[in-house]
Image (tube, rainbow, N blue to C red; front, side):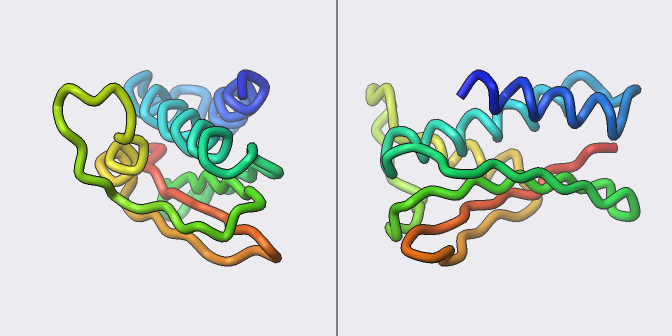
Length: 114
């Protein structure tokens, strides 16, 4: 997972060297959540893809894993230490979704990179 986060941070630095630190942190957090969800619920990620559209200033993070189970927003009690990953994604991303990818799935999130 650490290599994935380094990759995300480096790609953002190349695409937008003067990017706002809070936007970069939000993107890295979203990447961490997507990678952690794949590790915790789907046997680990098999791919991490990033794409950037300068016209819309949106960065897409896509994580593929081998589980067909789709992510969902869960109701979580305040005292529970886990279960907020997709809620964090839902809050940070302008859009997110999931599509089948072979026997598994790809979960993606679009985040602003002004």
